[in-house]
Image (cartoon, rainbow, N blue to C red; front, side, top):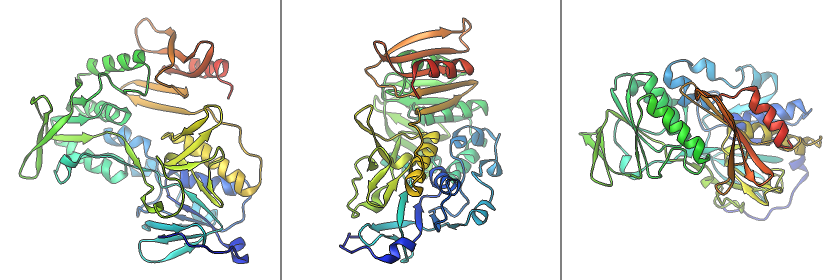
Length: 397
C-alpha cells in the first residue's frame, strides 16, 4: 500500500489507538494504557483466530505435557470487555498508510487510527529443503507446538537443526519424553554468539549428560523422506542421521513485510528511537521493534518476553502523557532440563567473562561480563537470589 500525502483532520483526534499484533506485547500495551488512565478507544488486531497466549512455554511445558491451552492465556477472555478493548481476531494487516493514518487488512477493510502500535512479532525461519515434508517442524505458535507434540508422542528419535535457545529447549523436552535427540549446529558450540564460552560449554555438558548428541560444524544438506514423511537428514559431510521427527530452529524473521510501502524504516524490524517511536503517531514494541539504546549508541532488537512489557510501558506513557518508566535492564531466561539460565543486561561477543561463584557439584554458577571494571551483564544458572543481588551490585538499573 503506497503512502500518499494527506493532511491531518479533526477526526484524527477521535480515531482509536490501533494495536496490530495480539500477542504478549500487544496485550501488554492495552493493559498499560488502561492502567495509565487512557480513555481512548483501543482496537487490538490479531492474525490468529485464538485468544492471545504466552509463547515461552511452547518449547518447554507444552511439549512436555505439563501445560495445556488454558494455562497459556495472557488474560481472561473477560479482560477485553472489562477494559473496553475491541479485540479483532483472524485479521491480518496487509499495509499501512501513515499519512492517512489507516491500516489495511487482508479482507479488504481498513481501520483509521490516531496512533498505531506495531506489535507483529517474528516468525520462525525455515529451510527450503524442509518445505512440504511431514514430520519436519518449526516452533513459533500454539498450533506448531501441538503438531510437534503429537509427532513426538509416537517418535523414538528427533533431529534438531540449530543449537540456539529454542533448539536446546526442544531437545531437553524431547529427552524428558524418552526420545533420542541429535542436534546439528554449524557453529562449534551451543547457543553460539549468545552466551560466553564458559556458559556454552556448561550447557553442552548438561545436555550430553542427559543423552543429547551434538554434530557441531555441520549443516543439513538434505532431508530424507519416505513418500512425504521425514526419515532422516543428510549432512554436508555426507553422513546421515536417521530420525522420525525434525525441528528446524535456526532463528526468526521480523514480521514487517506488510509495512514495505509505509515509509517506515524496517531494517531488521521496525526501527525506533529510544521511546519506541518509529514515526509520527507510529510506535513499535516487542520482538519486532529495533529500539535505539543511548547507552550503547545503537539499535537493539531483543526477542525476550519481558522486553515486550517494558516497551509497552514506554509507549503507554508516551500516549497518555504520563511519566515514562525508568530504563529496564534487559533480561531473559531459558529452562533446559533442571537448569534455568538467566541473563541480566547485554552480553557482546567481545566482552570478557568472569566466573564469580559456582557450586562444586556443578548445579549452579554466577558470572559477570564486560570490559575491565565496566559490567554489561550478569548471568547464572539456577542461581536464584544470588543473581538478583549481583544485578543490583553491578548494573545500575
